[in-house]
Length: 238
Image 1 (cartoon, rainbow, N blue to C red):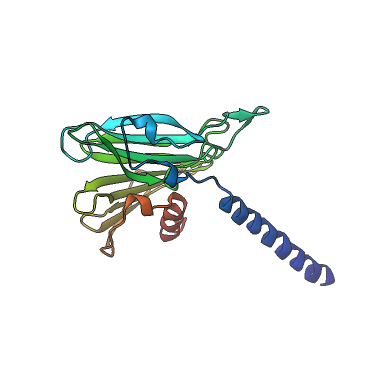
Image 2 (cartoon, rainbow, N blue to C red):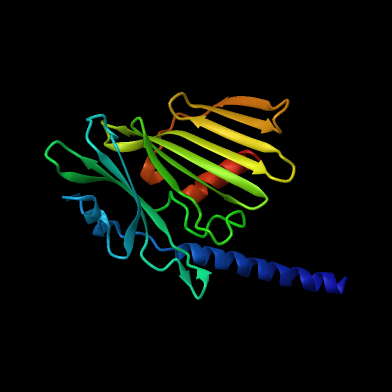
């Protein structure tokens, strides 16, 4: 009994210290300095602030004016590895819009949507974690996944809203796949119809449920990927 009463405070102390370290690490994550990103510029490269570089540049018409707009996937400008160990490099997304005069303007900036390069988990090992950005039929699509035994994939879809000049979240999909049991749980939320569909199963006799969600608009720059995923996993009891 004495050993048990002694061990419990020790375990609580170690757990508290561990959680404190996690919180500190999150607070120390590099965030892009949005004040260093100009409101207007002549070319896409001018929207990249010091300490960052373009990892990928995606082109497409986002506002229906038939002019090319840009989604700039930025990454910290530092080596991929240090002493043969993968460097933790943060990512950010800058949306740049074009007009008929050829002038480019900053439309949105987010540094909490794209996962970092070492956030892929054991499933990706030492490879950079994926963070796909696409523009298809005027829709901005962000797709990324991570995990080990359980692999979680998250897909966001945004549409430009002329009245607010912001990018409205119109769809969010999460798929969680247990690679050992084969169990797949998916959640698909339509932010235009406000319907959420959840499916569970192994490909046969899947169960599906539909629920109506509150009609609250969510915009690109409001989304924190980690918080969004955590909330979804809690809803799904995963």
